[in-house]
Image (tube, rainbow, N blue to C red):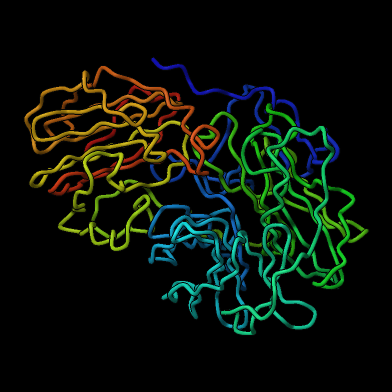
Length: 548
C-alpha cells in the first residue's frame, strides 16, 4: 500500500501568521483538529470543495491550475477568469454568488493568440471587457482586448491595442473620467473612451516599494497591477518578488494616491501578504485583487502553490481584509492553514461540476481544452452518440496537441474507454508540456508506456485490440497504469510505476500544471467514451471506480 500523502504538521499546528507580525491570528479562523488531519468539503467525484457547509470555508476556492485571478463584482454576482497560457478554448469565465462556490460558465476566447498571461476582466458602463497580454506570432508581447454586452457571450474578436512589450494589464477610470491601463513595470497608458484603442503614450506610473535586500525571492518583477477607487483614494495593489522560484518570493504590496496620475505613497504595512516559511501550507502567494463581499466586508483574491504540490499549479485563494483607521487595509487570514468564516450575505450557488464525463454534452472550454493548438484545432473534436471523437495529430504525445483537463486534488484516479479508428494511436496521460509527461497508450497491436516524455520501448506489451479501457492512478505523485480489454470488468496492471513530483514550473518552466490528458496520434482518430474521475482518500486507496 502506498504511503498516505504528506501532512504538513508544523504549519497546521502553529497558528496563523499575519504578514508583518508573525503570530497574529484572525478572529474568523478555526484551528485544525489536534489529530493533524486536514478537514475539507467534498464535491462532485469526491473533489475538494471550499465550502465546508458549516459557515466556514477552506482554501483554495478554485483548486488546481487557476493562476492570476481577475475578479469582477457585478451587482449580486461575481465573475472571475484566469491565465490560460497555451490551452484553448481559453479564458474560462467562472461565476459565484458568495465568493466561495464557483462554477465555470464558458470560454470567452476561441481564436488562438498563443500563450496568454494575466488578464483583467472589467465592466465599464453596460459592456464587459477582457484585456489580454499575448504573443501570437512569438515576436513580442502586446495587449489585446475583447468585449461583450453579455458576460456569457458572444465575445468579440481580439483587437490589438499595440501596447508593445507589456503584460499584466489593470484597468481603472481616473478622477478625470478617462480610462487607463496600468501594466507591469509599473507603467500606464490612457485608453480611448470606448476602451478599444489607446489615446496616449505608455509612461512610468509608480516605482514600487522594495523589500529588504536579504529576503529570499526570485527577482523584483513588479507585475499584476490592480486598481480600486475607494473613499477618495486610488489603491494600487501590485505583486513583487517573482511568481515562482523560492517559496518565500512572491508577495502583495500596495500604494495609494488621490489621483490616477500620482504621486503614489507606499503602504506602511507592506508586504500585505507573503509566505515567510516553507513550513506554511501555501507558497509564493501573490498577484492580488481586492473585492467587496456580498455584505460589504472586503476580501483579497490571489494565487499560491500548495506546499509539496507545485504540480497542481497556482491555485486561487481567498483571504479576508480589514480597513484600518489610517485608510489602509491589512490581510487577516494569516498563512491560510485554518478554516475561515465565509463572506456574509451571499447566496450559496453551484460549486464545480464533476469531471466524470459521459460525453453526452459539449464540455469543450468548460472542462476540456487542447494544449498549444494550431489554428483550426477545434475541428479535431466531434461529439457523437455518447462519445467524443478526436482526430489524430502527430506521431506521439510529444507532438499531438493532447486534450487536457485541470485537476485540483492530491490523489485521484481517472479512466476512459478508447476506440481506435483507422491508423490511430491514443492514450491517457499526465501532461505538463511536450517535454514533460507520463502516460499509457496503445496501437492495434501494442500497449505503450511513456516516462518523462519518452516511450519506454522495452516496456511495450503485445495486445491485439482496437478498444481498451485505460486507468491512470496518481497517488500523491506516484503513478500507476492499468488497462482492460472488457470495459473494466478485469484489469491488467502495467509493471512500471512513476514518480512525478518534479513536473512543475521550477523544473520545466512555463508556469503550467500537471493535467490529465488524452492524446490521439496518427492518421486515424480516437473515440473516447465514459471518462470517469474520482478522488482517492485514506480509506479507499485500494478500491476501484464503481461500474455503471
